[in-house]
Each structure stands twice: as structure tokens, then as C-alpha cells.
Length: 341
Ligand SMILES: [Zn+2]
Image (cartoon, rainbow, N blue to C red; front, side, top):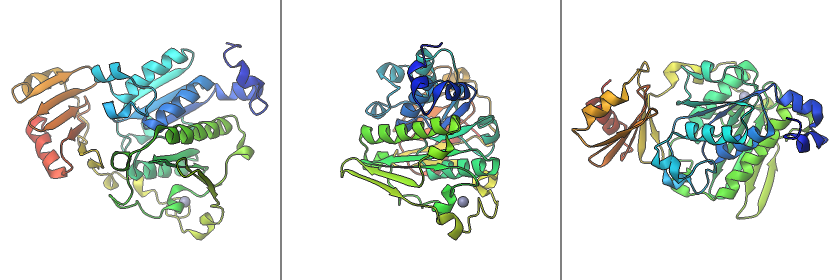
């Protein structure tokens, strides 16, 4: 093992002691898209004790341009992102524990999925999940690293509970649907995701080796096309904001009532539907039932059914992603017709 981390141990900021600390730590990555693939790769190579990868999605052809852990074979095999990432990364480093969870992070599973986390790395693509992570991490004193990318622009910031402002201090409410673009509507170039994720991974290494003094302060904004790198100071925001999360200690995103069972995946022309109580679906039985309606294929992770102009992807916990519509009521109708509530 001594050779594996030799160059990292030589580095003055980490050393033997830092490496030892690192190997006792658990990181949780929420969202394994463009950002997540890169940060997971860097953290697994750096050598933690455990990386848990939580992702709700499967791999599509348009992901390959920037999601560096996936390949064409993963698509042919219909693999969820969490599974494909775990398989790749475990080959890179067989000495650490890599866990994959195919799930939508929500108030009812967040306690289980973020258990033992020393850090949470943001690889999500939406504010609903980020505010959920923010509430949980501030409440439990866990550092987390915000990251977001679109076009050629990326943002990242460390959120260290009780020390820095939190995401809620920065953005009082969730930006309304449609006012912030997504990679699916505005496009993205891969280098910006790679850069922001690299910053996130470096900051994670500092946090996990107790190098808090060297952490990047404020909100970093980079535009690789316009050649701009800006650091926005956020020191006084915490004092100014009467933040629901870190001042009033009201963690409303952790309440189940706040969470929508139906989420339009913006720009994707798809809707995610959660099963109210989580169910144990037998995909083989469902497949034989749906064969009469359309083209069906399945593996142990998911079932895919093409029915008319829609594509239904169903997971064993009853969660479904229905593509071909942005209309929640159409998606719900298809769900109850073919899968059942
Ligand atoms: Zn706050």
C-alpha cells in the first residue's frame, strides 16, 4: 500500500499523517453526472475509507460527452449511473469501500443515505436536492461542497456549518422552475465540469485531512469561454441574512410534506414519480405484464418499457422516470395505468 499514495504523502499539505486521516473518512457523493464522475474518480484515487455514491438516474448517450466514468457498453447494459460508477471505480482502487445507491435523495431516506458522512459532495443538478442536503448538513454539522455547471460557467463554494454562510443564506428561496437553465436546455462543455469537480475534490481533501485554514473562502465563479475567474466574498452575508436554516434552525426541507412525489426533470422532457411508501416491485412480473403494451427489457436494477411515444423506466423501489412528457398529470396517468399505485 505504501507505493499507492507515495506522491500524495510527499506533498507538504497532506503527508503521512494526512493520508492516515483520509483513510478513516467517509465521503458521500450525491449525483453522479459530469461533476460527480470527476470528483468521485479523484477521491477514490486519493484513498478514503469509504465513498458512497447516490444517484437516481440511468446513463444516456448524451451523457458520454462529459460523464467520464461511463462508456457505450454501460448504455447497452442499461446500467444505472451509481452501479456503473461503482464498477469502474472499484477497479481503480480495490482497497476502499465503494457503495452505490440507486435512489432519489429525499427527506425519508436522507438519514440512512448520509449516515457516517464526514463530507457531502454536491453532484446534483437541482436546487430542491441541494436545499435538502443543506438543511441536513447544517443541522448535523457536516461540511458540504456546493457545485454547479452550465454552458462554460461553473460555481462552487464550501459550506462549513457554523463557520460559513449556508446555501439558504445565499439564496432565500428555491429559484423558480424554468428561471435557471439546465445542461439539457443550455448545453455544457466538459472542461468546466471537470474544473469545478477538481476544485470540489481538492477542497474535500483539505476538509478530510483537517486543513481547514487552507480552505477556499467565498463563492468561486469560473467561465472558461470568456476566460473569467471570480471570487465573490460572502463573509457578511451570514450576518445580514435572517437565514431559516442556520439562524432560525428551521429545517423545512427535511419535512416530508415539503417534498414533491412528482418531479419534472427540467429540460429532459421527463418526469420522476416516487412510490408513496416505496414498494418492492418484482421487475420480471411487471415485465411480463407490460409486454402486451410495448417493448420491454429489464435487468436486476431497472425495467425499461417503450409504450407509444413514452419511455417508462421503473426501479425496484417503485420509483419511475417517465420520458416523453413534461406534464406531471400525463406521467401520473401512465404510472397508474401501467405500474399502479
Ligand atoms: Zn444559512
